[in-house]
Image 1 (cartoon, rainbow, N blue to C red):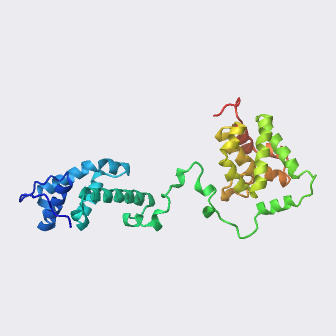
Image 2 (image 1 turned 135 degrees about the horizontal axis):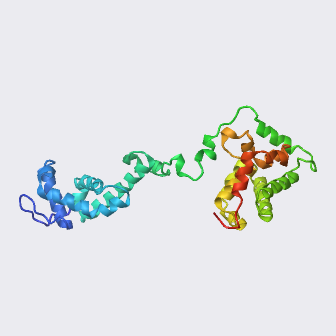
Image 3 (image 1 turned 30 degrees about the horizontal axis):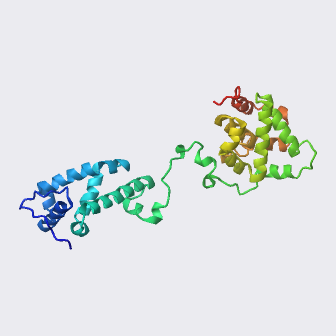
Length: 291
């Protein structure tokens, strides 16, 4: 135990801004009992000093300075603070740890006590569904509902896969029709071909339309090479691959242009789909400049 080298007169008056003074104050408060913290003038001053000292640290973690003071008060009453060679270092370290735990607790929507534990703190902060550019339920498997019976979409995909090559519904024919459809609605021919072929290659690698959609949506490099704005790129992906929202998976919007062409729909049929035509035409890049 480090001896108390600061002699304090009865009633206080310690220089609490120094290590020796704070140690003397904490020792005296401990000897006088818990009630001394409520009535001692020096105790009130040291709390005000702590509020100023830890205000920046508290604001860094999104807390009120007096929340940091509360943490400082708790550690000041401990034996480790009273007997430390530098009580302020002990207090500062404890306040920093508490501020971090408070911030993590608010982010994780749990108590500060739980946020201090590694098996809770490893998780990311809670997120609202509206915080992301694309709604979480559009692509996260936890929000998807699987029909226990084979749905029409999968049946159509298997049927399309079984078609002989060279027919009207072959993959190569569907790709060319998709390029023609996009070009007719105002997209530059070169851009339309490059974009559709890139989507088809990604679809072949991914194995499913939903996986391909998520990979391509985040593919900033390809979008830059195609010189497409983000709104045009996302709209084209939804039009070609379909909207992945489970509730509309079996509709025309959910199937997308490529699958609709594979299962036998023709360009005239697609051109009579007013919603699809409007979506693709409005997404066409204008004069090569990004919007």
